[in-house]
Image (tube, rainbow, N blue to C red; front, side):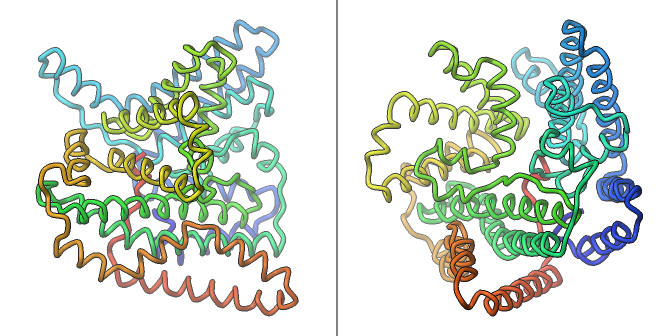
Length: 469
């Protein structure tokens, strides 16, 4: 079930809000858990069993670590079992066919693929399960004796299938005690509508262009068309994913939870290093805190530091998908980060700021080609088309069509990548017209919500990229 679906907006969400707020305090978590399980099981009932197994596994292992906390050897063994168990679950469902396919290629085997159906959001809820047990091991959160609380942490529907990845230490206290007032609830609605607008009004339009362009053989591209396709995808993936994160944060506030930010206007970055501080923050910090620092972080020799960075980014790419293009995408950014750290970082900082932005955006966009392509060969041919290295024409009628037909959508997308809205909001609130501006803001939000509903009623194109991760 998508947050941007009519059944969610007009059936599921009103139902859970009503029952949550009329329920006594002791039952509120139970109501949220029941609806969260229903939300996940709505599209794939069989996948619900996988998530329930993940919850049970991490609940039991969390209790065992707490029980043997005084015995470092046993506690560490249980922690190792936690990591292996969770990686085993995600490995079976997400990577089995990838390994079979590559072993067949390397050794000339003919082992049939299993065609395992991957549960939606398995990468997210598996990482949250590991986060719970690791944080208990590190004494950054208390072990939950109540299995329903562990289940709620892992299955909570706002962040269940696409993040942000919520660290257990962040919400451990909120599971047991939280509050909602009118301001918090209204800010949650505002954040949800803004996220919905990003997803429906911008990401879907950009996604339509990207899908049409990437469906064409690269030999049929003009240079301009190839750039239009990847720029549309650059906008789509940002507004799709950040919009979903905004909706998740807004929904969390409606129920009293405060999730950390997951995006901070990444396309205004002046370097790749800055980009990854602003993009998918919850995933970057997860790998930093649980993998990079565990290997010694930057408190090691230069050789080991290079190893740590490359390994983390290889895993980051592999986390996104069982395909070589994702691995290449991760290593691509790992190498860029190493170049900035050891070679070109100081030189970039001396450049005129617009050139710094241009540098970062160019390499970010080139990276999205790898991410969007179905194979490394397709990505290579796409790069050739982008730079006209195979004699492609500079301009085509199809490219001009997209520019004319979607000029307003591209302009809105470009403006929305910059922090204009929060800057205007802060200035207007501090002015003497703050109260009247507040009414205008609510009218704008109502208008945006109305436009989203009109779009959803009249369109069948409503994908979500990160469902497959």
